[in-house]
Amino acid sequence: MNFDPRLIAELRKLAASHESPCSLARLVADRQGLSPDKARLTVISYFREAFHLSLADAMQIGAAPIFPGENRSASEVDAELLRLFETTRDTWRTG
Image (cartoon, rainbow, N blue to C red; front, side, top):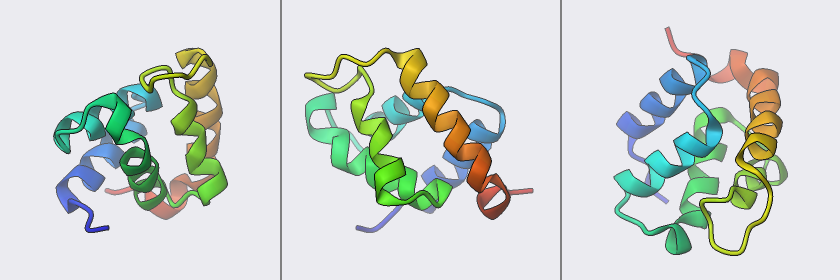
């Protein structure tokens, strides 16, 4: 997959400002022109690239309620991913 470096930078900047991961997932889907039912794999891939997450950790965003068929709350998904972002923050934080 070819990643948009501007989108990666924007995701990192927003995450550093404590933007919710579910909002970031919507941003990726919107910027890539994908409907939620088609965006899950792309969002997971962008989260792996932007935040240096393992596949298992990045897959947490796939449970976000923006995706059809998911029943976890946004606050639950956000809390888990914010915790994961903190563990890798020093590797991805930009000036």
